[in-house]
Structures are given as structure tokens and as C-alpha cells.
Amino acid sequence: MWVKRQERILLEHGHTENTNVWKYFTDLFDYLPLTALVDGQIFCLYGGLSRSIVTLDHIRAIDFLQEVAHEDPICDLLWSDPDDHGGWGISPQGAGYTFEQDISETFNHANGLTLVSRAHQLVMEGYNWCHDRNVVTIFSAPNYCYCCGNQGAIMELDDILKYSFLQFDPAPRRGEAHVTHRTLDYFL
Image (spheres, rainbow, N blue to C red):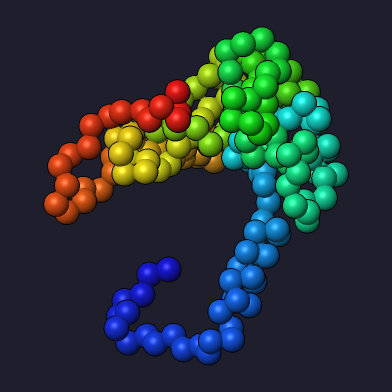
């Protein structure tokens, strides 16, 4: 939210509201969608595909008002990643799976999709195509953790779902030298 004259705003609350306000905000996340479908063609999510989900109807049937269990399709939607090894694999992160091109192609075909758009993985140029352009990873946080030197990106769609990518560099921080591109070991 943008406020023109911040100095004229005073937020008052008592000491008893702090925990309730925090709880209300965290409870709100239970009601936000984990996936989105753009014009029936582009499937958007944070992580990746799930072994338990073959069709979008399987996702629609999930009760999302629950804690995310480790062995759960919701966990997979949040933490799975595309990979270059065949079929399904065990994620080195300890949650979700890895999935290969044959999995994403089958999922897209079964659901009439043209693209799976996801985030979750650092990519140095802000976005990265994989699986013969069936999956795109879009990472919008430039200079992740103030040390990776990566670009951020967003995908823009027009009325006929033609897409383009807007890449951007991090804003310079006062008193810091320019950050060079580097990938932390965690992301390798």
C-alpha cells in the first residue's frame, strides 16, 4: 500500500490485540489459493507437480484448510521441482518430488494446458524454460538473500496469452558495492 503522507498516519492498538492480529493474518493464508489456472491454458503454482495429481479436478477436490503434511499432494504442489532425470524422483530438499519432461508433457496434455508456470527455484536470469518449454520457472526476487546477484523476472500475458518476460536487476543498496552473480551452494 502506498501512502502519500505517512507522517500523518497513526496506528493505535492495545497490547492485547497483538497475538490476535498475528493469528488473523496467518489464518488468512489458509484461504488463499495455492494454484491458479489462466484462461484454461496456463497452470500456475509455487512448486511443481504431484504423483497424486493427474488432473486439475484432483486439485479442485483437495481440502486446503489443513496443515500441510509431508506426504501430501499439497506438499508436492509447494515443493516439487522439474528435473532432467526420467520420471519421478526423490527431491534432495526432503519434501516434494522431482519430475521429468515426460511427466510435465503428460500432465499438460491430460489437462489441455500449454504451460506450467512455477517459482520456487533460484534462476540467475529471472526465468528459465525446461522440459521443451512445457514448464517455466519464474523467480521474481532479484539478488536473492542480498548475495546471489540474480535478476528477477515477471511474465506478462496479453489478451491472447502471448507471453513476454520482464527482467529486472536489484535496486542498488546504499553503501554496498555492486553484487556479482553467484549461486549459493544451497541452490546447486
